[in-house]
Length: 270
Image (cartoon, rainbow, N blue to C red; front, side, top):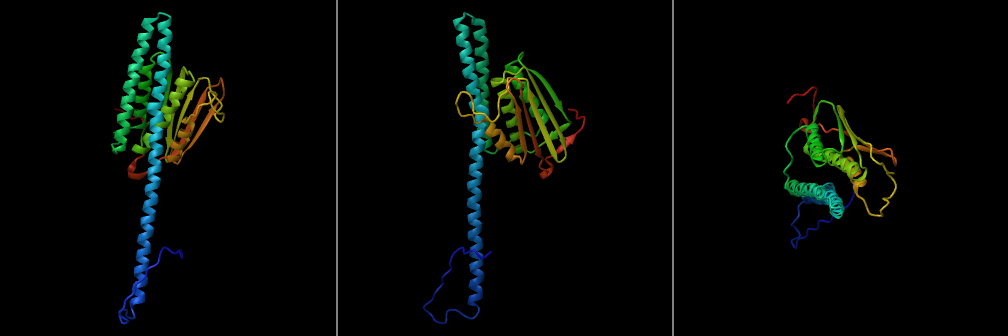
């Protein structure tokens, strides 16, 4: 283009310092210098974008992990207080055990966040395996509260970053269904048809109005983080919910095909 990047000025006290080829050489030199300056500017822009994306990722991880765990522990503390007032010591002890497990999860979340900052990516396993581990985590915390219905299509292997974003969306959906919706039935459906994949999380909780501000007046980051995670996958997320009718969250995204990160195995066996 004809955009001016800078000015190259060269002078000499010797009137014979520059020959006939000097203008051509200086023009070439100025073009090389302009390209170098533009590359440096692009690199700085890339660094700023990367830093912003990293801050957004850390904020999302904190919301998915520490913030949700602290909120969960707050609910448990209230329940323990009520149990003690009613003399229900055995029940209070059970909730305290849940609080201990919650603290262990918080510690694990912190270590995982630190590891991710050090570029230690999770082991390569199917997204179904990650989902089963997540469901197992919830089941251990509330063994008799939620009935799970898992409908998986073969085995799908994603890149570590895709896995991180998909699992972040799923965890947020499950936490909302459990902590805010009081759901007793949660269905997770995962299906893929190259080059796209889709995951649907549906619950029978209390539901809400997605575009309405929270009734408690507090700032909630959950829905914005869900949309940001979906955008990072070049995907689309739809949230369908009405008071008293539960919530359905549907994520559809284009699976990256770099380095064979997409593999689907029908009727996979361990």
